[in-house]
Length: 103
Image (cartoon, rainbow, N blue to C red; front, side):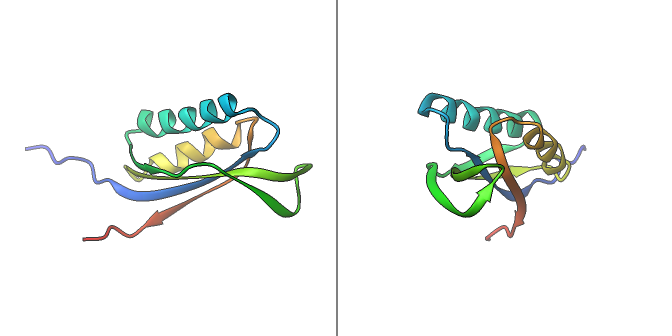
């Protein structure tokens, strides 16, 4: 009998440029969620984007949209997602952390 791949709980926090319209913001979030699913993950929760001011300029921007996505995925998926986010034109910063599964 084959074992199902182990899926871990992760959270990705993405900062998206503030100079895009709502449709482009939604499109960026949809693309991130699609990438997670393509890498074998499943979305647990996506928080509403929040526009926040930075304490200092980041890549020429004074503010950006913060989006947090909680997802389950195999252990290889976060590295692939990091590569995807690093080449995105609208993503200013991102971080992925492994979360503890609550039982």
